[in-house]
Length: 214
Image 1 (spheres, rainbow, N blue to C red):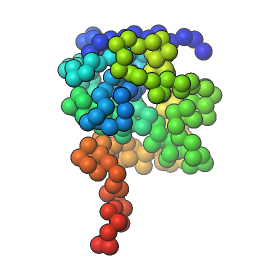
Image 2 (cartoon, rainbow, N blue to C red):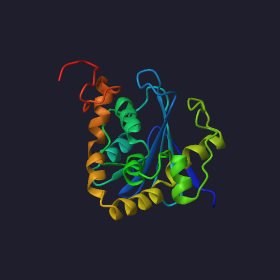
Image 3 (tube, rainbow, N blue to C red):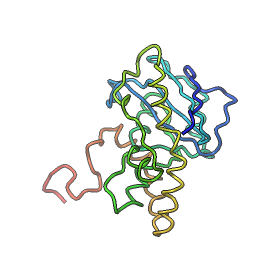
Image 4 (cartoon, rainbow, N blue to C red):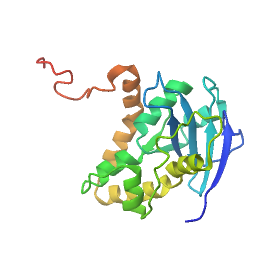
């Protein structure tokens, strides 16, 4: 596997950065609670073996170029477990990312023969790659990122395009592409529900609040 080219930016992507109409994105934060744990890093890749990392200082989330791309209807944003990233980006950057594709959702719908849908599982099962996850619990708020952190962050976006291509083939093969697309279209709304307090509630369940009412 050739070594990827990784470029680090501070506070935003360059205005002239061209990533195409399908951009893989991931985020790194200090934790899993938006109000408590700040967003530290956004990773992007066009699927060509290069990755762009945007490092944020606390409270400095202007990033007009990144925000423009996140809401551009002509650019599909490609995630793994998009639900979490969409909520994180909306909370800190103030924009809801759309349209989106989520390899986790696509895998769950396409790969009903498996219960393994993590990015590491997909990289291994679909592409035959073994992704290192040692930096998953790293401190992303440090002033300077280590080379290991940069490589880990890049690995979360470098292979999503190839994974998406394989999953799309499965979805079409088994007649599930339209169903998957409908679920993907709902993801921004699911993220809004999370941010508004319904993150632990299945709003479609018969008794979402364990009540006896219909």
